[in-house]
Amino acid sequence: MNGVLAGRTVLELGSMIAAPFATHILQQLGAKVIKIEPPGGETTRRLVRGGPSGTYIAYNRGKSSICLNLQTEDGSRIFSDLVAGADIVLHNLSPSAARKMKVTFEDCEAIRPGIVFCHIKGYGPGPQSEEIASNPIAEAATGVMFANRSTGKPSRLGPSYHDQFAGCYAVIGVLSALLDPDASAERRNIQLGLYETGLHIAARELVGVQLKSQITGNPEQEPSPEFSMPGYGAYETSDDRWIYLVMLTDEHWRKFCLAARIELDPELATLRQRRKHRPVVEDIVAGAVKDKSYEALSATLAAAGVGFTEVLSGDKVLDVEQAQNPPKYTKVPFASFTFDAPDFPVSAAASPEGREAPPPLLGEHTVTLLRQSGYSEEAIAELLAVGAVSDASDDGDLWNTKIERLAVAR
Image (cartoon, rainbow, N blue to C red; front, top):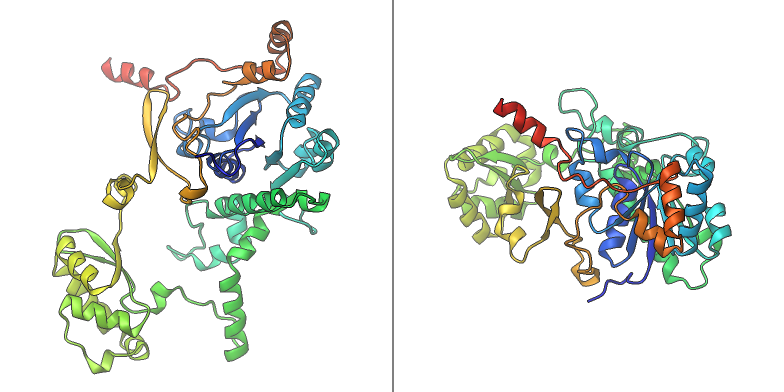
């Protein structure tokens, strides 16, 4: 089965998460993705003990890598040759860097009329459009960080969800342009801000604050369900495992009591009553959970139709049957290791092509892509010699593990 984007070529100039995540999805949908990297490679190649991070491995598999110095005349010319054969250009360079290296919509449209272009940047149109923003800045500017206070101080969520949401929105924009055979230049020139992405993600909370303001006169933050619903959250079982319960409604409460063999108290039948007696409810739930092993409790909860799951650490997530049957991930070899990399979840639209291919070494496909662009062996050798391009070094020990093992042995 071919993916819906089979036959399409994407040029990615991406670093960290947003752009590589977007092109990862496009690759899983069948597109050929050429990752254009500067000398030294993109940032995530050097984040873990001097080697690639989980981000790089997870979101760059199946891509080709060409290492170009776009600040040279030769590098810029090669980029133009690649644009001429591409359908989509997607990057998250800063606005000033994009102009300096001639990676703007106008530059690419002049080379390849009709191209679909997507620039994921810090801010969309507005007074801050030239400023740089990253995932935590988007969280801080859109209200997410203000509400997340695990230690009393506003802090980031942890995972870079805004980057990944922006990547998803970028894919939606690209697909919408591809679906329109008469797409205007305006539709094909997709400018997407992390800030604007954050606003859309936070729409529920921002509208909730307005609702409270208009009802009560106070701009109160809408509490998360976990803090506003007694019995909603993580509780520890007798065998020291954690179970997460979802109790939003009175029916949820009734089913939980039935499964946990708790006598229904008419004074706690409604959410309003349970909120009024929150400490009592929390004690009841925590006690009922602590009285049983996880396996025993989960069996009764499942039979009663209660929403729950185990709170798992990252090393155990892919060990559960739901993740393994059928497999929701692909085994990907890279360097001297093998990784279980989760796949794009819409399998009907995805392609198996390249799914098991490892992420590329820096410049691994430089020579191949130059040959395909019509460069002679002599010309390629000259480009390598002057540093306009680089090819991969065949280094299977990207994290210097051999050096560490030798040090331990000594």
